[in-house]
Image (cartoon, rainbow over all chains, first blue to last red; front, side, top):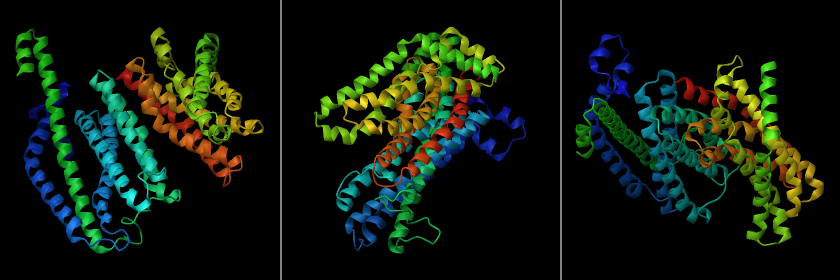
Length: 269
Length: 223
Protein backbone atom coordinates (compact mmCIF):
# COMPACT_ATOMS: atom_id res chain seq x y z
CA UNK A 1 0.00 0.00 0.00
CA UNK A 2 3.00 2.28 -0.39
CA UNK A 3 1.40 4.04 -3.36
CA UNK A 4 -1.25 5.44 -1.03
CA UNK A 5 1.53 7.74 0.19
CA UNK A 6 2.15 9.12 -3.26
CA UNK A 7 2.84 12.72 -2.39
CA UNK A 8 1.81 15.74 -4.30
CA UNK A 9 5.21 16.64 -5.62
CA UNK A 10 5.72 13.38 -7.51
CA UNK A 11 2.28 13.46 -9.02
CA UNK A 12 2.50 17.10 -9.99
CA UNK A 13 5.66 16.32 -11.94
CA UNK A 14 3.65 14.47 -14.60
CA UNK A 15 1.00 16.08 -16.75
CA UNK A 16 -2.21 14.84 -15.20
CA UNK A 17 -5.87 14.81 -16.04
CA UNK A 18 -8.41 16.30 -13.70
CA UNK A 19 -9.58 12.87 -12.54
CA UNK A 20 -6.02 11.80 -11.81
CA UNK A 21 -5.40 14.91 -9.78
CA UNK A 22 -8.58 14.44 -7.73
CA UNK A 23 -7.84 10.78 -7.12
CA UNK A 24 -4.36 11.25 -5.74
CA UNK A 25 -4.79 9.92 -2.18
CA UNK A 26 -3.21 12.97 -0.54
CA UNK A 27 -5.32 15.37 -2.53
CA UNK A 28 -8.35 13.15 -1.99
CA UNK A 29 -7.90 13.46 1.77
CA UNK A 30 -7.59 17.25 1.42
CA UNK A 31 -10.61 17.92 -0.80
CA UNK A 32 -12.87 15.34 0.82
CA UNK A 33 -12.03 16.78 4.25
CA UNK A 34 -13.03 20.25 3.12
CA UNK A 35 -16.16 19.01 1.34
CA UNK A 36 -17.53 16.77 4.08
CA UNK A 37 -18.94 19.40 6.50
CA UNK A 38 -20.97 21.03 3.69
CA UNK A 39 -22.09 17.67 2.35
CA UNK A 40 -23.18 16.53 5.83
CA UNK A 41 -25.14 19.72 6.45
CA UNK A 42 -26.78 19.48 3.04
CA UNK A 43 -27.69 15.81 3.64
CA UNK A 44 -29.34 16.56 6.97
CA UNK A 45 -31.21 19.50 5.45
CA UNK A 46 -32.51 17.67 2.38
CA UNK A 47 -33.47 14.47 4.22
CA UNK A 48 -35.12 16.51 6.98
CA UNK A 49 -37.12 18.50 4.44
CA UNK A 50 -37.89 15.35 2.44
CA UNK A 51 -39.18 13.57 5.54
CA UNK A 52 -41.37 16.56 6.42
CA UNK A 53 -42.66 16.72 2.84
CA UNK A 54 -43.26 12.99 2.62
CA UNK A 55 -44.68 12.32 6.06
CA UNK A 56 -46.70 15.51 6.62
CA UNK A 57 -47.20 17.60 3.47
CA UNK A 58 -47.92 14.83 0.94
CA UNK A 59 -51.57 13.70 0.87
CA UNK A 60 -52.49 10.16 1.91
CA UNK A 61 -53.17 7.85 -1.03
CA UNK A 62 -56.85 7.40 -1.95
CA UNK A 63 -56.41 3.61 -1.91
CA UNK A 64 -53.45 2.93 0.35
CA UNK A 65 -54.11 5.63 2.92
CA UNK A 66 -51.26 6.61 5.22
CA UNK A 67 -49.19 3.48 4.49
CA UNK A 68 -48.15 5.01 1.18
CA UNK A 69 -45.67 7.11 3.15
CA UNK A 70 -43.44 4.05 3.47
CA UNK A 71 -42.70 4.69 -0.18
CA UNK A 72 -40.66 7.79 0.68
CA UNK A 73 -38.09 5.58 2.40
CA UNK A 74 -38.57 2.34 0.51
CA UNK A 75 -38.13 3.60 -3.05
CA UNK A 76 -35.00 5.73 -2.47
CA UNK A 77 -33.44 2.88 -0.47
CA UNK A 78 -34.09 0.46 -3.33
CA UNK A 79 -32.68 2.90 -5.88
CA UNK A 80 -29.59 3.46 -3.78
CA UNK A 81 -29.15 -0.29 -3.25
CA UNK A 82 -28.71 -0.65 -7.00
CA UNK A 83 -26.78 2.56 -7.49
CA UNK A 84 -24.33 1.50 -4.78
CA UNK A 85 -23.76 -1.79 -6.57
CA UNK A 86 -23.06 0.18 -9.73
CA UNK A 87 -20.52 2.22 -7.74
CA UNK A 88 -18.88 -1.00 -6.55
CA UNK A 89 -18.71 -2.35 -10.12
CA UNK A 90 -17.30 0.87 -11.56
CA UNK A 91 -14.72 1.09 -8.76
CA UNK A 92 -13.80 -2.57 -9.28
CA UNK A 93 -13.32 -2.08 -13.01
CA UNK A 94 -11.23 1.01 -12.27
CA UNK A 95 -9.13 -0.90 -9.78
CA UNK A 96 -8.50 -3.86 -12.09
CA UNK A 97 -7.64 -1.69 -15.10
CA UNK A 98 -5.72 1.23 -13.59
CA UNK A 99 -4.73 -0.45 -10.31
CA UNK A 100 -5.51 2.75 -8.51
CA UNK A 101 -5.59 2.05 -4.75
CA UNK A 102 -8.34 4.63 -4.21
CA UNK A 103 -10.67 2.66 -6.51
CA UNK A 104 -10.29 -0.35 -4.23
CA UNK A 105 -10.89 1.87 -1.20
CA UNK A 106 -14.07 3.12 -2.87
CA UNK A 107 -15.29 -0.41 -3.63
CA UNK A 108 -14.55 -1.62 -0.14
CA UNK A 109 -16.27 1.35 1.49
CA UNK A 110 -19.39 1.07 -0.69
CA UNK A 111 -20.19 -2.61 -0.11
CA UNK A 112 -21.47 -2.39 3.51
CA UNK A 113 -23.46 0.73 2.57
CA UNK A 114 -25.07 -1.14 -0.30
CA UNK A 115 -25.90 -4.03 1.99
CA UNK A 116 -27.52 -1.58 4.42
CA UNK A 117 -29.61 0.07 1.68
CA UNK A 118 -30.68 -3.33 0.37
CA UNK A 119 -31.62 -4.46 3.85
CA UNK A 120 -33.58 -1.23 4.40
CA UNK A 121 -35.40 -1.70 1.09
CA UNK A 122 -36.29 -5.29 2.00
CA UNK A 123 -37.48 -4.41 5.51
CA UNK A 124 -39.56 -1.39 4.51
CA UNK A 125 -40.97 -3.35 1.57
CA UNK A 126 -41.89 -6.12 3.94
CA UNK A 127 -43.63 -3.70 6.31
CA UNK A 128 -45.45 -2.18 3.34
CA UNK A 129 -46.41 -5.59 1.98
CA UNK A 130 -48.15 -6.65 5.17
CA UNK A 131 -51.05 -4.13 5.00
CA UNK A 132 -51.15 -3.99 1.17
CA UNK A 133 -50.63 -7.61 0.05
CA UNK A 134 -51.52 -9.29 3.33
CA UNK A 135 -48.11 -10.85 3.73
CA UNK A 136 -44.65 -9.78 4.77
CA UNK A 137 -42.96 -11.72 2.02
CA UNK A 138 -43.84 -13.22 -1.34
CA UNK A 139 -41.44 -15.04 -3.63
CA UNK A 140 -41.98 -12.81 -6.61
CA UNK A 141 -39.25 -11.92 -9.04
CA UNK A 142 -38.48 -8.42 -7.76
CA UNK A 143 -38.24 -9.46 -4.11
CA UNK A 144 -36.19 -12.54 -4.92
CA UNK A 145 -33.73 -10.68 -7.11
CA UNK A 146 -33.23 -7.96 -4.49
CA UNK A 147 -32.66 -10.68 -1.91
CA UNK A 148 -30.04 -12.15 -4.24
CA UNK A 149 -28.42 -8.71 -4.39
CA UNK A 150 -28.29 -8.72 -0.60
CA UNK A 151 -26.60 -12.14 -0.62
CA UNK A 152 -24.15 -10.83 -3.18
CA UNK A 153 -23.20 -7.92 -0.91
CA UNK A 154 -22.70 -10.40 1.96
CA UNK A 155 -20.55 -12.57 -0.31
CA UNK A 156 -18.37 -9.58 -1.26
CA UNK A 157 -17.81 -8.79 2.42
CA UNK A 158 -17.14 -12.43 3.30
CA UNK A 159 -14.59 -12.88 0.50
CA UNK A 160 -12.72 -9.74 1.48
CA UNK A 161 -12.66 -10.78 5.12
CA UNK A 162 -11.44 -14.27 4.31
CA UNK A 163 -8.29 -13.10 2.53
CA UNK A 164 -5.28 -11.91 4.50
CA UNK A 165 -3.45 -10.18 1.67
CA UNK A 166 -5.26 -6.88 1.18
CA UNK A 167 -4.18 -6.31 -2.41
CA UNK A 168 -5.26 -9.82 -3.44
CA UNK A 169 -8.51 -9.43 -1.50
CA UNK A 170 -9.25 -6.23 -3.41
CA UNK A 171 -8.62 -7.82 -6.78
CA UNK A 172 -10.60 -11.00 -6.17
CA UNK A 173 -13.51 -9.07 -4.66
CA UNK A 174 -13.44 -6.85 -7.74
CA UNK A 175 -13.71 -9.92 -9.99
CA UNK A 176 -16.68 -11.19 -7.97
CA UNK A 177 -18.36 -7.77 -8.07
CA UNK A 178 -18.04 -7.64 -11.87
CA UNK A 179 -19.36 -11.20 -12.24
CA UNK A 180 -22.26 -10.22 -9.98
CA UNK A 181 -23.19 -7.21 -12.11
CA UNK A 182 -25.42 -9.53 -14.18
CA UNK A 183 -27.94 -9.19 -11.37
CA UNK A 184 -28.57 -5.44 -11.94
CA UNK A 185 -30.56 -5.72 -15.22
CA UNK A 186 -32.42 -8.71 -13.76
CA UNK A 187 -33.58 -6.59 -10.81
CA UNK A 188 -34.51 -3.64 -12.98
CA UNK A 189 -36.53 -5.61 -15.52
CA UNK A 190 -37.84 -8.37 -13.23
CA UNK A 191 -41.18 -6.57 -12.90
CA UNK A 192 -41.51 -6.37 -16.70
CA UNK A 193 -40.30 -9.87 -17.57
CA UNK A 194 -42.49 -11.70 -15.09
CA UNK A 195 -45.96 -10.64 -14.06
CA UNK A 196 -45.39 -10.02 -10.38
CA UNK A 197 -47.11 -8.73 -7.30
CA UNK A 198 -44.56 -5.92 -7.07
CA UNK A 199 -45.72 -2.98 -9.14
CA UNK A 200 -43.77 -2.00 -12.27
CA UNK A 201 -41.73 1.18 -12.56
CA UNK A 202 -43.89 4.22 -11.95
CA UNK A 203 -41.40 7.08 -11.86
CA UNK A 204 -38.76 6.55 -14.54
CA UNK A 205 -40.64 5.52 -17.66
CA UNK A 206 -40.91 6.68 -21.23
CA UNK A 207 -44.46 8.02 -20.98
CA UNK A 208 -43.71 10.03 -17.86
CA UNK A 209 -44.28 9.15 -14.21
CA UNK A 210 -47.63 7.64 -13.22
CA UNK A 211 -47.23 9.03 -9.73
CA UNK A 212 -49.22 12.14 -8.85
CA UNK A 213 -47.09 15.28 -8.62
CA UNK A 214 -48.00 15.84 -4.95
CA UNK A 215 -46.26 12.54 -4.12
CA UNK A 216 -43.63 12.64 -6.81
CA UNK A 217 -41.76 15.71 -5.64
CA UNK A 218 -41.30 14.61 -2.00
CA UNK A 219 -40.10 11.26 -3.36
CA UNK A 220 -37.54 12.96 -5.57
CA UNK A 221 -36.40 15.14 -2.66
CA UNK A 222 -35.89 11.98 -0.60
CA UNK A 223 -34.03 10.35 -3.49
CA UNK A 224 -31.67 13.33 -3.64
CA UNK A 225 -31.33 13.20 0.15
CA UNK A 226 -30.47 9.50 0.11
CA UNK A 227 -27.92 10.07 -2.66
CA UNK A 228 -26.32 12.86 -0.64
CA UNK A 229 -26.32 10.60 2.41
CA UNK A 230 -24.58 7.90 0.39
CA UNK A 231 -22.00 10.38 -0.91
CA UNK A 232 -21.32 11.67 2.61
CA UNK A 233 -21.00 8.31 4.31
CA UNK A 234 -19.08 6.84 1.38
CA UNK A 235 -16.54 9.65 1.57
CA UNK A 236 -16.27 9.20 5.35
CA UNK A 237 -15.73 5.47 5.00
CA UNK A 238 -13.16 6.01 2.26
CA UNK A 239 -11.25 8.49 4.42
CA UNK A 240 -11.25 6.00 7.28
CA UNK A 241 -9.97 3.28 4.99
CA UNK A 242 -7.19 5.50 3.63
CA UNK A 243 -6.18 6.43 7.19
CA UNK A 244 -6.30 2.77 8.25
CA UNK A 245 -4.02 1.75 5.38
CA UNK A 246 -1.62 4.57 6.11
CA UNK A 247 -1.49 3.55 9.74
CA UNK A 248 -0.78 -0.06 8.81
CA UNK A 249 2.00 0.84 6.42
CA UNK A 250 3.44 3.25 9.02
CA UNK A 251 3.46 0.47 11.58
CA UNK A 252 5.05 -1.91 9.11
CA UNK A 253 7.66 0.66 8.21
CA UNK A 254 8.54 1.25 11.85
CA UNK A 255 8.61 -2.45 12.60
CA UNK A 256 10.90 -3.02 9.65
CA UNK A 257 13.33 -0.30 10.68
CA UNK A 258 13.78 -2.06 14.00
CA UNK A 259 12.00 0.46 16.17
CA UNK A 260 9.46 -2.03 17.42
CA UNK A 261 8.90 -0.13 20.62
CA UNK A 262 7.79 3.00 18.72
CA UNK A 263 5.42 0.92 16.65
CA UNK A 264 3.89 -0.45 19.81
CA UNK A 265 3.19 3.08 21.06
CA UNK A 266 1.51 3.89 17.74
CA UNK A 267 -0.77 0.88 18.10
CA UNK A 268 -1.59 1.62 21.69
CA UNK A 269 -1.89 5.35 21.18
CA UNK B 1 -6.66 -28.77 -29.36
CA UNK B 2 -4.29 -31.57 -28.40
CA UNK B 3 -3.33 -29.71 -25.26
CA UNK B 4 -6.99 -29.06 -24.45
CA UNK B 5 -7.82 -32.75 -24.82
CA UNK B 6 -4.76 -33.69 -22.79
CA UNK B 7 -5.91 -31.51 -19.86
CA UNK B 8 -9.43 -32.87 -20.21
CA UNK B 9 -8.20 -36.48 -20.24
CA UNK B 10 -5.87 -35.87 -17.32
CA UNK B 11 -8.66 -34.40 -15.19
CA UNK B 12 -11.06 -37.17 -16.15
CA UNK B 13 -8.51 -39.81 -15.21
CA UNK B 14 -7.71 -38.07 -11.95
CA UNK B 15 -11.39 -37.76 -11.12
CA UNK B 16 -12.20 -41.37 -11.96
CA UNK B 17 -9.13 -42.94 -10.36
CA UNK B 18 -9.40 -40.95 -7.15
CA UNK B 19 -12.86 -42.41 -6.77
CA UNK B 20 -13.43 -41.32 -3.21
CA UNK B 21 -14.61 -37.83 -4.07
CA UNK B 22 -17.41 -39.06 -6.33
CA UNK B 23 -18.49 -41.51 -3.66
CA UNK B 24 -18.63 -38.67 -1.14
CA UNK B 25 -20.73 -36.53 -3.48
CA UNK B 26 -23.17 -39.35 -4.22
CA UNK B 27 -23.35 -40.24 -0.53
CA UNK B 28 -24.03 -36.62 0.37
CA UNK B 29 -26.79 -36.44 -2.24
CA UNK B 30 -28.32 -39.61 -0.80
CA UNK B 31 -28.19 -38.31 2.77
CA UNK B 32 -29.68 -34.91 1.86
CA UNK B 33 -32.60 -36.58 0.07
CA UNK B 34 -33.05 -39.21 2.78
CA UNK B 35 -33.10 -36.69 5.62
CA UNK B 36 -35.95 -34.62 4.14
CA UNK B 37 -38.80 -37.13 4.54
CA UNK B 38 -37.59 -37.63 8.11
CA UNK B 39 -38.04 -33.93 8.75
CA UNK B 40 -41.21 -33.41 6.71
CA UNK B 41 -43.04 -36.60 7.60
CA UNK B 42 -43.67 -39.58 5.34
CA UNK B 43 -46.71 -38.13 3.52
CA UNK B 44 -46.19 -39.52 -0.01
CA UNK B 45 -48.44 -36.93 -1.70
CA UNK B 46 -46.52 -34.05 -0.14
CA UNK B 47 -43.20 -35.67 -1.02
CA UNK B 48 -44.26 -36.16 -4.62
CA UNK B 49 -45.25 -32.53 -4.91
CA UNK B 50 -41.90 -31.23 -3.68
CA UNK B 51 -39.71 -34.03 -5.06
CA UNK B 52 -38.60 -32.15 -8.19
CA UNK B 53 -37.39 -29.12 -6.26
CA UNK B 54 -35.76 -31.21 -3.55
CA UNK B 55 -33.86 -33.30 -6.10
CA UNK B 56 -32.62 -30.11 -7.79
CA UNK B 57 -31.48 -28.51 -4.53
CA UNK B 58 -29.70 -31.72 -3.56
CA UNK B 59 -27.96 -31.76 -6.93
CA UNK B 60 -26.74 -28.18 -6.47
CA UNK B 61 -25.44 -28.81 -2.95
CA UNK B 62 -23.68 -32.05 -3.88
CA UNK B 63 -22.00 -30.45 -6.90
CA UNK B 64 -20.81 -27.58 -4.72
CA UNK B 65 -19.28 -30.07 -2.33
CA UNK B 66 -16.80 -31.29 -4.91
CA UNK B 67 -16.08 -28.13 -6.88
CA UNK B 68 -14.01 -26.29 -4.29
CA UNK B 69 -11.16 -28.72 -4.98
CA UNK B 70 -11.19 -27.93 -8.71
CA UNK B 71 -7.90 -26.02 -8.62
CA UNK B 72 -6.71 -26.82 -5.10
CA UNK B 73 -5.10 -30.18 -5.95
CA UNK B 74 -3.24 -28.63 -8.87
CA UNK B 75 -2.06 -25.77 -6.68
CA UNK B 76 -0.76 -28.16 -4.03
CA UNK B 77 1.27 -30.37 -6.36
CA UNK B 78 2.46 -27.50 -8.53
CA UNK B 79 0.76 -28.55 -11.74
CA UNK B 80 -1.27 -25.33 -11.74
CA UNK B 81 1.97 -23.40 -12.35
CA UNK B 82 2.73 -25.67 -15.29
CA UNK B 83 -0.76 -25.23 -16.69
CA UNK B 84 -0.57 -21.46 -16.29
CA UNK B 85 2.78 -21.16 -18.01
CA UNK B 86 1.86 -23.58 -20.80
CA UNK B 87 0.86 -22.64 -24.34
CA UNK B 88 -2.81 -23.44 -23.77
CA UNK B 89 -4.72 -20.28 -22.80
CA UNK B 90 -5.83 -20.39 -19.18
CA UNK B 91 -9.44 -19.90 -20.26
CA UNK B 92 -9.30 -23.21 -22.13
CA UNK B 93 -7.60 -24.92 -19.18
CA UNK B 94 -10.52 -23.78 -17.02
CA UNK B 95 -13.00 -24.94 -19.68
CA UNK B 96 -11.38 -28.39 -19.83
CA UNK B 97 -11.37 -28.70 -16.05
CA UNK B 98 -15.00 -27.61 -15.76
CA UNK B 99 -16.07 -30.08 -18.47
CA UNK B 100 -14.16 -32.80 -16.65
CA UNK B 101 -15.89 -31.83 -13.41
CA UNK B 102 -19.27 -32.06 -15.10
CA UNK B 103 -18.48 -35.48 -16.58
CA UNK B 104 -16.99 -36.93 -13.40
CA UNK B 105 -19.34 -35.39 -10.80
CA UNK B 106 -22.29 -33.66 -12.47
CA UNK B 107 -23.34 -36.44 -14.79
CA UNK B 108 -23.26 -39.30 -12.22
CA UNK B 109 -25.24 -37.11 -9.81
CA UNK B 110 -27.80 -36.37 -12.53
CA UNK B 111 -28.11 -40.07 -13.37
CA UNK B 112 -28.39 -40.88 -9.67
CA UNK B 113 -31.34 -38.47 -9.24
CA UNK B 114 -34.19 -40.69 -10.56
CA UNK B 115 -33.07 -43.44 -8.20
CA UNK B 116 -33.29 -41.03 -5.26
CA UNK B 117 -36.60 -39.84 -6.70
CA UNK B 118 -38.05 -43.24 -5.81
CA UNK B 119 -37.54 -42.38 -2.15
CA UNK B 120 -39.61 -39.22 -2.64
CA UNK B 121 -42.35 -40.90 -4.64
CA UNK B 122 -41.20 -39.07 -7.79
CA UNK B 123 -43.09 -40.64 -10.74
CA UNK B 124 -40.75 -43.13 -12.41
CA UNK B 125 -42.00 -42.53 -16.00
CA UNK B 126 -40.91 -38.89 -15.62
CA UNK B 127 -37.30 -39.89 -14.98
CA UNK B 128 -36.32 -39.05 -18.54
CA UNK B 129 -37.62 -35.50 -18.16
CA UNK B 130 -35.88 -35.14 -14.79
CA UNK B 131 -32.52 -36.31 -16.15
CA UNK B 132 -32.98 -34.17 -19.26
CA UNK B 133 -33.63 -30.90 -17.42
CA UNK B 134 -30.84 -31.61 -14.94
CA UNK B 135 -28.41 -32.40 -17.74
CA UNK B 136 -29.29 -28.99 -19.23
CA UNK B 137 -28.52 -27.16 -15.98
CA UNK B 138 -25.69 -29.18 -14.45
CA UNK B 139 -22.95 -27.94 -16.83
CA UNK B 140 -23.74 -24.40 -15.74
CA UNK B 141 -23.23 -25.47 -12.12
CA UNK B 142 -19.76 -26.77 -12.95
CA UNK B 143 -18.81 -23.68 -14.93
CA UNK B 144 -20.15 -21.08 -12.48
CA UNK B 145 -18.67 -23.14 -9.65
CA UNK B 146 -15.28 -22.85 -11.35
CA UNK B 147 -15.41 -19.08 -10.78
CA UNK B 148 -16.04 -19.67 -7.09
CA UNK B 149 -13.26 -22.26 -6.93
CA UNK B 150 -10.82 -19.79 -8.48
CA UNK B 151 -11.91 -16.95 -6.18
CA UNK B 152 -11.65 -18.99 -2.98
CA UNK B 153 -8.41 -20.74 -3.96
CA UNK B 154 -6.14 -18.60 -1.72
CA UNK B 155 -8.50 -19.03 1.24
CA UNK B 156 -7.63 -22.68 1.62
CA UNK B 157 -10.52 -24.88 2.65
CA UNK B 158 -13.02 -22.41 1.24
CA UNK B 159 -15.95 -24.77 0.73
CA UNK B 160 -18.40 -22.85 2.89
CA UNK B 161 -17.27 -19.50 1.56
CA UNK B 162 -17.66 -20.80 -1.99
CA UNK B 163 -21.23 -21.82 -1.21
CA UNK B 164 -21.98 -18.34 0.16
CA UNK B 165 -20.42 -16.62 -2.86
CA UNK B 166 -21.86 -18.79 -5.58
CA UNK B 167 -25.32 -19.81 -4.39
CA UNK B 168 -26.82 -16.48 -5.58
CA UNK B 169 -25.62 -17.33 -9.09
CA UNK B 170 -27.22 -20.78 -8.92
CA UNK B 171 -30.65 -19.38 -8.09
CA UNK B 172 -31.59 -18.66 -11.75
CA UNK B 173 -30.48 -22.16 -12.77
CA UNK B 174 -32.56 -23.62 -9.96
CA UNK B 175 -35.63 -21.51 -10.81
CA UNK B 176 -35.66 -22.32 -14.51
CA UNK B 177 -34.65 -25.94 -13.99
CA UNK B 178 -37.61 -26.54 -11.70
CA UNK B 179 -39.91 -24.46 -13.92
CA UNK B 180 -38.99 -26.66 -16.89
CA UNK B 181 -39.49 -29.81 -14.87
CA UNK B 182 -42.88 -28.75 -13.50
CA UNK B 183 -44.15 -27.51 -16.84
CA UNK B 184 -43.20 -30.75 -18.61
CA UNK B 185 -44.87 -32.78 -15.86
CA UNK B 186 -48.21 -31.18 -16.67
CA UNK B 187 -47.92 -27.95 -14.72
CA UNK B 188 -49.28 -24.69 -16.13
CA UNK B 189 -47.51 -23.07 -19.07
CA UNK B 190 -45.30 -24.42 -21.79
CA UNK B 191 -42.06 -26.19 -20.94
CA UNK B 192 -40.27 -24.71 -23.95
CA UNK B 193 -39.86 -21.20 -22.51
CA UNK B 194 -38.09 -22.11 -19.24
CA UNK B 195 -36.16 -24.85 -21.06
CA UNK B 196 -34.84 -22.31 -23.56
CA UNK B 197 -33.90 -19.86 -20.79
CA UNK B 198 -32.16 -22.66 -18.90
CA UNK B 199 -30.22 -23.57 -22.03
CA UNK B 200 -29.33 -19.92 -22.56
CA UNK B 201 -28.06 -19.68 -18.96
CA UNK B 202 -25.91 -22.77 -19.44
CA UNK B 203 -24.50 -21.56 -22.75
CA UNK B 204 -23.76 -18.12 -21.28
CA UNK B 205 -22.00 -19.75 -18.32
CA UNK B 206 -20.05 -21.98 -20.72
CA UNK B 207 -18.75 -18.95 -22.60
CA UNK B 208 -18.31 -16.35 -19.86
CA UNK B 209 -17.34 -18.29 -16.74
CA UNK B 210 -13.93 -19.50 -18.05
CA UNK B 211 -12.90 -15.88 -18.62
CA UNK B 212 -13.90 -14.82 -15.10
CA UNK B 213 -12.27 -17.87 -13.49
CA UNK B 214 -9.07 -17.54 -15.53
CA UNK B 215 -8.92 -13.85 -14.68
CA UNK B 216 -9.32 -14.65 -10.98
CA UNK B 217 -6.45 -17.14 -11.24
CA UNK B 218 -4.16 -14.73 -13.13
CA UNK B 219 -4.77 -12.00 -10.59
CA UNK B 220 -3.48 -14.32 -7.86
CA UNK B 221 -0.31 -15.52 -9.50
CA UNK B 222 0.74 -12.78 -11.89
CA UNK B 223 -0.22 -9.74 -9.85
